[in-house]
Length: 261
Image 1 (spheres, rainbow, N blue to C red):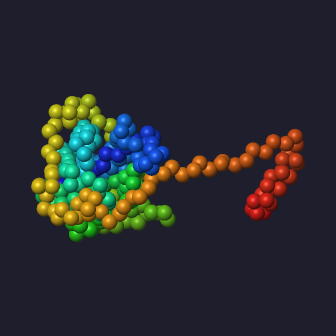
Image 2: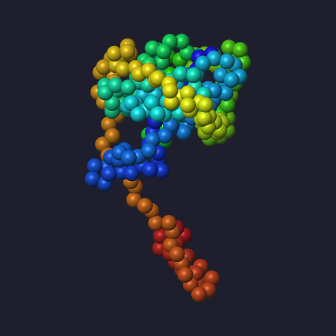
Image 3: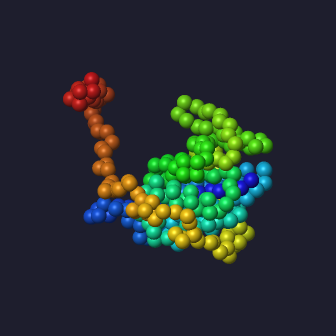
């Protein structure tokens, strides 16, 4: 089977800072990582390949440095990687991003299963995967916690708030995965050495059958006007009294003042 895994290089959330003047993310000097949910999607593809055979191709849209993320995926065991990169793609929202990724997947040729992480940790929209499916006109199953293949049937155990539901589909299909589906493997030394030598092809605007007005900032109906850090909330009030009775009395008084009781 032909597996395509969409991954994104994102800022390490432990290092994210916001410029107090411009209210935008400070990206300079901030380390980047492979979106953690996308690693779960890649691990799912690798396990299915090991069980049923096939090929795993990883793709990403981003600047040239996104090759580092793709090479990490190759080191984990992916067979091939492709970067989609062009200035025309810059500033894309989820709609323009999914449109570009769908065009790149069509350029790659035949596919059976497309896997994405349920969402990216920098945007948390969970929109790109389902939108790719809509652009390609294929079935989608989101929040997969388990994936099994039986002949031409793909059985997905879908996680939601009240439990799980089992959905059975046929390829081609796009599936988004949750964290609980697996524990991503670490890159091997041999895999890392091989990945470092790999030449990753780059698809540009000229390589894709797309309409320029649907790309990048021009093709993005969503506009982010401001990003800011919420004010830190005070975590409770410390009450210090000589006796428990006095402490309880003051607590009741404060709750009454706050109209809680």
